[in-house]
Image (cartoon, rainbow, N blue to C red; front, side, top):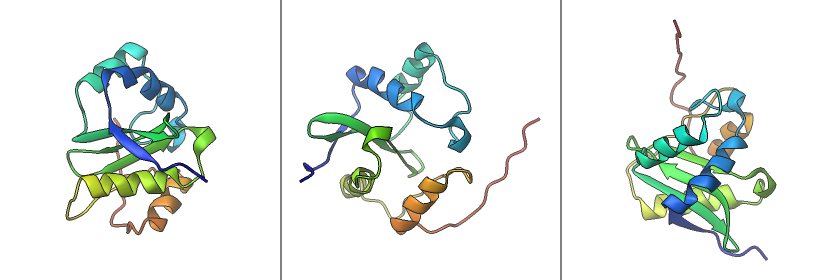
Length: 136
């Protein structure tokens, strides 16, 4: 039986883990970054406390992912590849929502990220817009 998932706020000691997590993300299915930042850039980003709430996801006392709530009530989640498809993301999002009640939550997903689109649909998020970008 899977041990209960818990989420604990990000600390300085989590920088390395968060960088490892970031390195597993597919930049083609990502909207927050297109290339891997340097470790120094990563530390600077994390130190700025970019989200209103940011947690490390634990399973069996092992760090398996992170989940956050942005200052605009946007939810973001990523689980290490070897822990995907175990229900961890669903439980972590539920814990995030329980700890941080809001009227609504948003999830910005790359159109290329089919897994995330399916995941948020299963979590009862509804598609509300398409956003276009022009880079000059």
